[in-house]
Length: 292
Ligand SMILES: C[S@@+](CC[C@H](N)C(=O)[O-])C[C@H]1O[C@@H](n2cnc3c(N)ncnc32)[C@H](O)[C@@H]1O
Image (tube, rainbow, N blue to C red; front, top):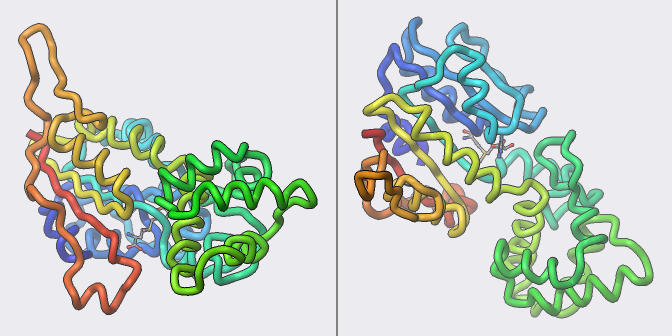
């Protein structure tokens, strides 16, 4: 949904834009194409691999940090208010396809799944040290796994004998009781759930969204593409009420209007052509709002 994202940003050639999820740089390049020499794009990615792909462009700044700190970085670069913010959440195709990162159950690799290699929590820690209750909760809430409890107890029993070291060791454990027809889907959900926990994705998204209203100029656009219903709920809440929890904000004069005007009541989803070309986009939801 790249064209819809770019259209949603309503780019002014001299504007200042932020792409908080640079990844392979596809969206960033499309934004840069629409800026003139007075425009600026500030892009973030916490994954060092993203740096192998940076455009050489005088109107481009790259920040190799977590986007939960984006407001501080905007201040540092003297652009506290910007014209548009884009977030294309989750992990990139590069991260999934790079088997050694441990994001995929189709490649054998150490249980890692960190986007930021300097952060402490790894998938190994989650799988080998979390209680069965915590694993069940994570598998249910972040992965909506049908076999959440069974899987957590299988892990609990196995690790009494030895620690679980690799992605395939983990996937093989699950495969023992998941019917073949459901296996790929369930394993994808399992790996998604662990990844969300390892990278604290929902907490980080909350912190990021909380900073957006303050960081946009009036008329500025917030464009967010999410891939999980829990993410989408936070985005929708923020855009409709101004609070990620969906609470109407009140002050001494009563309930306040949301700082955002939602530009699409229903989320935009990929069309058939995009789904065929990129099956990973099937859960994508795009929401666009304008700062009042
Ligand atoms: C779906 S990809 C973005 C793809 C990108 N729009 C493109 O055109 O190639 C998401 C990217 O965001 C990065 N990312 C995810 N969460 C992040 C965070 N909290 N802070 C910084 N980067 C993050 C990931 O490392 C990944 O490279």
